Length: 225
Image (cartoon, rainbow, N blue to C red; front, side):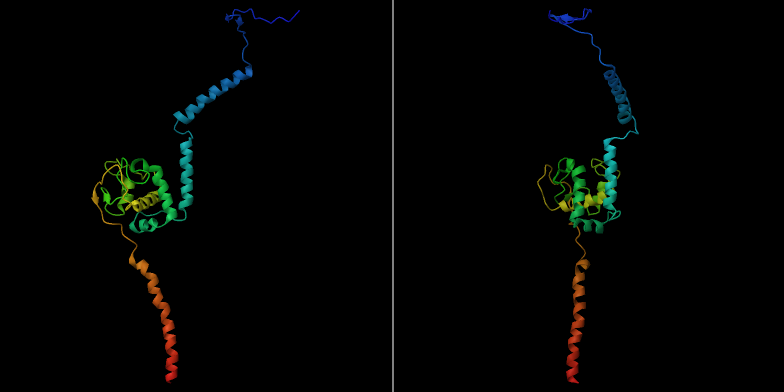
């Protein structure tokens, strides 16, 4: 006699000859489910409700600060003065840092290339809030236009403000077409490197040739005597 299937005669739902058996989940499975439920509540309270929870954004910001400390250790804290800006406008490695700051924080308003979107075009000679080179870090730090241009002094390292300002200054003169027309007034060109610095090699050259000239005269005096 063939084995007959075991059918549970308990009053469970049945349809079309299909019977539903009452097989409870294993205890270990139920305990794991309960543990994950309890953990999810603690996770939500710690990461999303409480103010002291560690988050990925906080971890990124902390790592960024530590990385900046390492990178800026060799240059110290930069001052947003004219000499510093002019100096870093010519240093490609540090301009890349300023460019990365611009791409991360400024392109949403000024465009990826600085030609302007919501904010003004940074590649032409027209400015509303900038009249001289040192006005750029001031505007970046304090904001402008009733904070339509936000203040970044509490969100960027002082060196980041100087370096992004130096990068923005280098965008001028490209005159890229933008969505907004010229805004403000034409401002004077940025100051160039002082002529005294460029003249140093020329001043040293005559000093080196003077001894040679004096030595060439000595034999002539000897022949006369």
